Image (cartoon, rainbow, N blue to C red; front, side, top):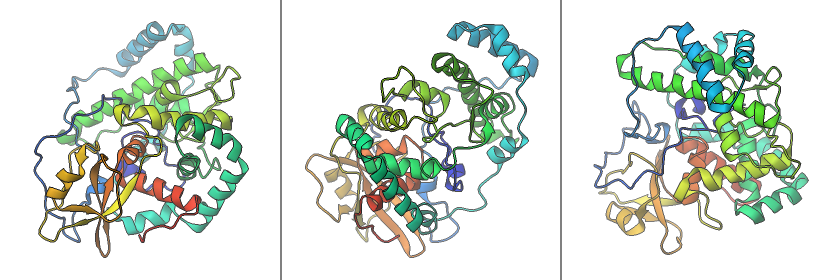
Length: 384
């Protein structure tokens, strides 16, 4: 969950995205200007773009020497979480710079792919059958979580399937190394237009590094043994430290929250993330996720700047969108465009679709998770 839709599109075995910045629920946009349907080639499909939020505070770009930034971090983290500064210093002294992390974080997507290429990377016969086996094996635990939270068991399983192949690969990079690298050496492109974004990303990872120290204290974790993704996400659900602390749940009542090996805690925490991360638009028990739609031939494609599902069906109808299957009365949605080799697919994403995008800020990711969950549950899939 870490706000990098483009990077996540090309990560097949380990998506590592279970955190994002924690803004309040965005307000509904007023009278945005619809944009024309993109050309079949040479354009960037809307679903590969992150939400265009304009509420981020500007960051001071004045350079700070590494030694000063590091010392400030140790002092502030110790005060913030009641930690021994000497422990933080000693831990950072053993951390290593990860050139592979820098390379992966700075590597641009080679090209933009469409939904017809993206979906087969995650929705495969082997991933579906493995998910069905995983669901069958842990049905009792998952059913208890579903009953308590309203998040379907197959949605929880699909997240684990996309993120770590049901725990088959959770990452081998030392978490302390990954976060130390990105906290103080986040790659810079030199592009002035990206300077604010890159500075915010470094501060984001610096906060995640601080959160890691707090997490280790709270859950009695050995920082020297923690491994995860190249960006510092951990466990079967690939939670970043802040999400681990904010949304982690002690699912079996043993007094600890273990998202690395304890399936009861993992299942409960993934469901809790869906329920709470979206704020007012967190998971709705029994609510729809998405339905395909038709766009009138004389209408222009509508891609809102954020994906909050606040548009009524009447408002969407005035823009030319008609759902192809019945929708419960009173539902609100966001339009979703998926580019394919045969032309765009149009969907309406509801509150539960939005909840999935909070796990990873990518329209195609959310659609892949939902469709994988449908396949795991034995329900038919729409064509890619």
